[in-house]
Amino acid sequence: MGFRVVVLVSGSGTLLQSLIDAQSDPEFAAEIVAVGADRSQIAGLERAERAGLPTFVHPLAKGADRAAWDTELRDLVAGYDPDLVVLAGFMKLVGPAFLERFGGRLINSHPALLPSFPGMHGARDALDYGVKITGASVFLVDEGVDSGVILAQTAVEVAEDDTEESLHERIKIGERRLLVDVVGKLATRSWQVEGRRVRWGR
Ligand code: GAR
Image 1 (cartoon, protein in one colour):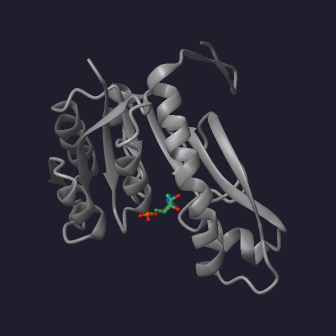
Image 2 (spheres, rainbow, N blue to C red; image 1 turned 180 degrees about the vertical axis):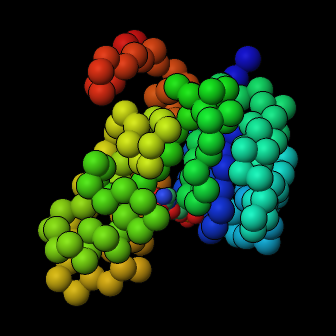
């Protein structure tokens, strides 16, 4: 049995693409079994379809019952029996039902060095603050906003003439590699969390 991964996306899906590409490496032990999104007609879903992966779309309508949306998302994902769920540019917060089911095997990737600059605009907030080094973080999702245990980080220098776009694009280069590394590691190694620290076994 492979290590089954469901990926959730909201946008261009370049992180997803790096995981799809990793699957052509026989050393990469994880298998993407489905890709879900909270909106249709995004490049992320097209990437999944091109790769022949099953997809599903579960939008959260304005004013809709958020708890019901969360429970339905949980059930859609659970239908693929994943060992790991990856939020790869998924721009919705998952709720308690989802977390109860997948907590501890649910990861997210963020374009800043957490705990700095959590939220929707990690790259922009770091640039506006004036930091000289930022990066990307892959972490275990908990009930907070980008507050879970950090599994891995990579650093990126901020250039004086960076714009939000140029900085975010550079962060994403390292972020794609980081996410592939972490997913590969989770598929093959044991690990445990002590406090806020993760310890990798064999
Ligand atoms: C990534 O930089 C990811 O960290 C960020 O969205 C981008 C998705 O890129 N996610 C967040 O900011 C979540 N709060 P992609 O659609 O090209 O994979």
